Image (cartoon, rainbow, N blue to C red; front, side, top):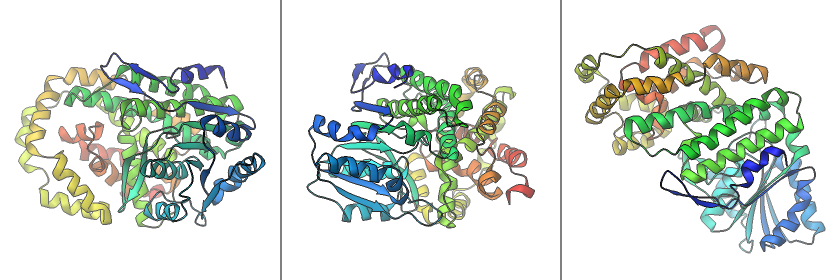
Length: 460
């Protein structure tokens, strides 16, 4: 492990009373990042008291690390069952009902621990399957490409909607440094971009604390800032697959998952930038377009959302009386539902049901928020002034040869416009998108961002 790992060691299998008033817990207890780490799996299983694992991988991850894992178990005389999900041609397995059903039908009822071999989808499926079957979970990672390595939640597609479900955090994370460093640059860049998105989500979390008095923890936020700082330091080395840079990035991704466990949800690691990513992912699924890495989309969304914070930092104080007087002229419920059916298609019913429960767009709730926003405008603007410049993140993505604008990964102009206007409807979560809607600036800002980042000639 690198010298940075002390920051992780203090959070392994821990429980402590925080100054925020809550007790933070993490079951994650073992982190192995070294060359040949998979060979340590049999000994770790024996140490933990498990002797019959159920392995889950896909076509790609089985070739990268699954065969090595199986060989290590065979050599140690450990019985196991291995289920390999077939990866679609030119695409990846989706974390949906079909994949979960395949895993369930192959389930070894006698297995006493679930092991996912993979990083993104396979990790999400494995830890959710572990959770619903009441068995512990262990992860053999294949790339530092996303921030859910040790998270206790899993974003899955259910009825065409991306929904975050409770899941089993891993007892251990095994990372063979050679495998991790050999990951394609686009996966390394995706992991880094996912972490850079925390700049925005921490702003969103604090914004909601100011406007809605939502729970916020400085300790957890500091953990995330450490993860972002580590990532920023590592980005230059990722292009050359530098071992140390990959190690630092992996630890940052682990810290992100620990922060989510401490908070009990994804708030410290997911904000409006993730809403953009999830919206685009849903549209790609609807249109049967090959998937784009989650972190890649998050990086693009981060640039867009930081633009909104940069705008907010320079904005004149709105005429709140005029905003209140104009509420009756906003989109009617009927027109909004029609837009949801256009944008969310088969997932529209879930979006409409969420709004009926959360009432994010209800005039009464809006009036209450406007009173708070008006009273705390200076505090909100001071928060916005702490945001990095969108151009800085754009440049870091460029240096990593990562996608920076929607056209880089084939996201059409209309997708982008709709994701900025309506991405907030995906979650009952206050973000910069909801604030811009509250002060009646969202449509205007959406048009501006599309004009700046999604020219017709390059973005379809």
